[in-house]
Length: 372
Image (cartoon, rainbow, N blue to C red; front, side, top):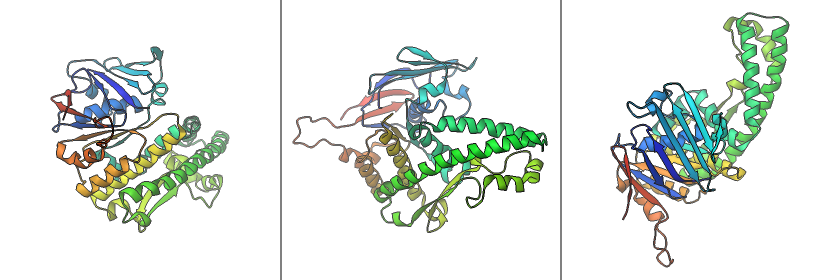
C-alpha cells in the first residue's frame, strides 16, 4: 500500500492538516524542530501502534490537548485511522468506517519501515533491538508468526512464574515441556526468515556498499546451543534458573549479529557506512514484505543528509530506484537531495513533464507543498 492522503489532528507540534502524497517518492524539508520528524512519526504510528521516539503518549498530543488523530487513505482507496485520548487512554480505530478494538487490526494493514538517527541502536542497543527488527519483518512476512509468538509468550510467563516461586516440581516440568515445544516452533520460523533476509540483504549491500559486500556476514543465534537439545540444557541448568527466577535459555534469547571480517559492524565501519548498511537491511526487509503482496511497504528515512556524503546519497538514490515501495525522506536543506532529484526527473521525451515525486516544506508545524 501507499499513503495517498494523510490527515493529522493535534499530533505533536503539527498543525491540523491534510496532505496528498506521491505514491512513490516524497521529500520533506525543514529546520530542526520544525515538524519533519513528527510527520514521519504520524505515519509510523499507524504502522506500529506506537511512537519510535517516546513511550509516553502525552508527548504525542499538542500542548493543552487531550486527544490526537491520525488517518490515511491508501492506494487501494481504503481509509484507516486511529485516535488516542491521553487522559483516559481510550483508543478508537476505524478501517473503512468500521470500528475495531485492537491496534493489531490496524497495523497489519500498514507495513512501515524506518531509518532514523536512533536506528543505530540495532548495532549498539543489545539483542532486544535486533529481535524487534527481525520479528517486525516476520509479523508481515510469516502470517502465522504473531500467533506463535503470542502462545510462546504466554508459556514463557507461566514458566518464569514457576521459577520465581521456586516450584521445582510437577508444574515446572509441565511448563518446561511446553516451553521447549514453542521455543522450537518460534526458532524455526525465525531461522527460515533470517535465511531469506540474508539472501535479500546481499542484493542491497551490493548496491549500497559494493566495496565491502563480500566481507559482510550474519551470525544467527536461536537462544540456546544449536548442537544441544533445549530440554537437556534446561534440566542441566535447573538450579541456576531457580536462583535467577527466570528462563535463561529459549527463543526469547534469540540474537542476530552483523559482522564484517568477523568483527561487529559498529566497530569496523564508519558512521556513514553503518547508515548505508542500516538502509540495506531496511530495504531487504521491505522487499521481503512486498513479495508477500499483502501490503506494499512504506519507507521512512529521517535526516538523509546526516552521515552521508554526496557519493553515498547517490548510491542510496540508485538503490531507491530499484525499490517498489513508497518512500518519504526528510532533510534540513534541499541541496542534499540533489542526487535524488536528478534521479527522479521524468525524461524530456515523455509526454508528462512532471517529476515523479512531491516535495513539502515544514515550518513551525505548518506543512506546505513546494513547487519548482
